[in-house]
Image 1 (cartoon, rainbow, N blue to C red):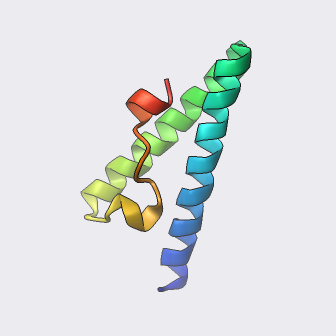
Image 2 (image 1 turned 135 degrees about the vertical axis):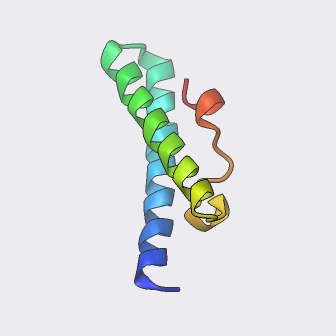
Image 3 (image 1 turned 180 degrees about the horizontal axis):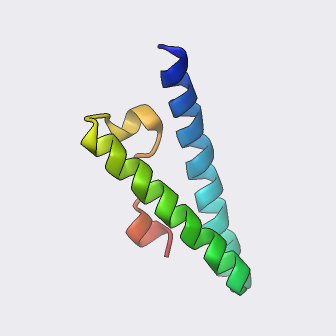
Length: 74
């Protein structure tokens, strides 16, 4: 793997982990900040998945599989 592939894989893992944690926090405390923070991750994960699709990159290569922003981050 190239350094770029490693970077994108690591970034995908971290983004997914942070997004799911933001969802848990938003569910638990329901503050405007927590809900907005989660919404930001919805946007980022959606964009990363759309760009991966546009470039023909399987979501598994970015570790962004197994998360659906429209169901998991709302």
